[in-house]
Amino acid sequence: MKVALMTLGCKVNSYETEAVWELMKDRGYQRVDFKEDSDIYIINTCTVTNNGDSKSRKMIREAVTRNSQGIVIVMGCFSQLKADEVLAIPGVKIVLGTQNRALIPDYIDEYRQTKKVVNKVLGLDRHVAFDDLSINAFANHQRAFLKIQDGCNNFCSYCIIPYARGRVRSKLPNQVLSEAKTLVENNFKEIILTGIHTGGYGQDLPNYRFVDLLRDLEAIKGLERIRISSIEISELTDEVISVISQSHIIVNHLHIPLQSGSDAILQAMNRKYNKQEYADTITKLRSAIPNLAITTDVIVGFPGETEADFAEMVAFIRYINFQELHVFPYSRRSKTVAATMDNQISGEIKKARVQILLHLSDELAKAYIKTNINILLQVIPETYHDGMLKGHTANYIYVQFPGTVNQIGELVDIIITKENYPLSLAKIITKDAIK
Image 1 (cartoon, one colour):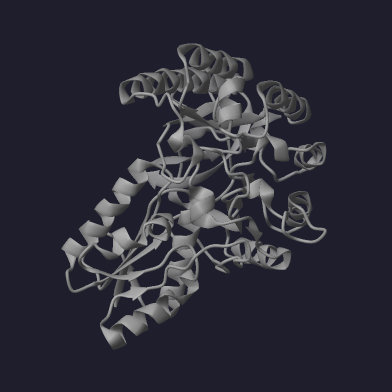
Image 2: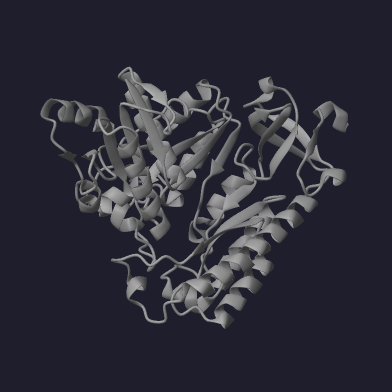
């Protein structure tokens, strides 16, 4: 039988979808594109913004329309928080939230036997166990995500995710290391450590922290790149910085959420730092790690954000000199503290501020690429088309360059030439040619 899978949202969702696919593959299913007719459709939903909710509803309805006799399964954050809304969509057969994804094949059997809608959405409390999923490969990817933890304890005032994912739960160290070894054996050169609060790994474990995991991963033979999907500024302790700076395989790129460059807004967001603390840690990082690329998340239009607050954020972003910004307009989420705040910002103002920061992000990205001209970089090509390879360098510059299909997934030495700036077209060279 055929199964089609759709992932909305974050890298954690991508990992979980891939893990569910491996379960289905083991049961003999054939994977098809989500736009094709299929016997089963699995939609992994997102609820981090209103747009995530909207896309989730759209994909669910598309699946039902494509095959009204198919088994439509909905899982993820949107269904965790809004199970009743999902169950009310005609044609949905199985609904679960952010737990027990490993039981999906059993839920399919249950539906086939009873022909009754299966609702497996469970409540989340402090004692929910880590949902133990694993992968051996990552279909159509040359870089593999490895989910090491779930949940978040921070409760930022704008964020719904702790309610959809629960508190921090960490995957046991031996399971993380075993999965990483399997991925390396299956020819993945780069592993991206991911989680809802990746740097919070180990908060619930006795005597084992994120820094210990980094050290143990470093020792895996054949692993050539480790990338941390995201890490909070408060988790970049001196010890973590030291491990990253001394590592031969942890890349010189970190994604460190900022969210706002205004101290007043950071406090209202219930973030755990101020601008000075953020800037001081960035200074330590850049002193310790050569040619470090730093990307970030920012939210514009948070309740009460004045023109002065926004100008302060723009100035701080320029001061930090990020490589790239991921810009999000504030999305009002029920059950969060920020949803009840006064001085909600209009959509028009948010849209205008988003555009300003997108233009700034483009400017910063081009400036960072310029600093990498004529420097030897390594890239793992991810795609090949018409004689051109595309992929990310260790410091997360997206490049395209001429090559052959057999170089996909392999480490390739490149130089970005002045002539090709800012398009990031790179000329392949060998290490021998550098001498």
